[in-house]
Image 1 (cartoon, one colour):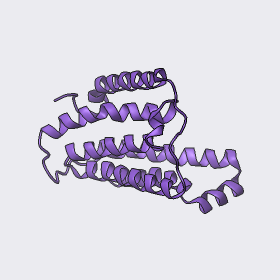
Image 2: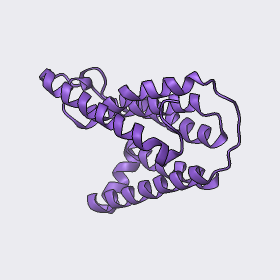
Image 3: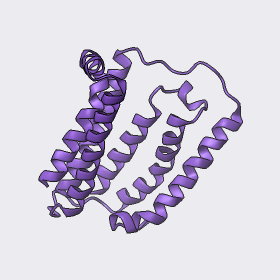
Image 4: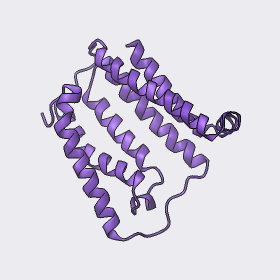
Length: 185
């Protein structure tokens, strides 16, 4: 459990640095762009690795027993979550509705997985990511995040949806192998 917590703290802390503009500016100026990005990436990667290892080796300590239907809701809501990930990195019109498609994706993923998993390690993992996404959205809005104003062709949105659906299908097939939880049960 300790490695999971340390990993989550590392991963989420380094991702909060851009929200603290004076800290980011000081680190960026002191280290330079390449070194800053290198250190940032190494800490994020180390945190991510510790999260994976820590979650895989954490004791299963039940805190609550979620109803079976929460697993179905999770699988259903992962469709828009995967589409939102694509929208974060591909040109399309979703950014006309929110400047934060990635954070909304993380919030959907974390919240629904939190509802479907009642063990202590899952609560720590998914609860931390849900809280992080909300804090990140609020912080970015406070710093002046704006929605996209340009209207793009519908074909760009169709590409995003296709990428999201293909990603969803890949994760649905890989999920039992990666996380020992079968899809659609």
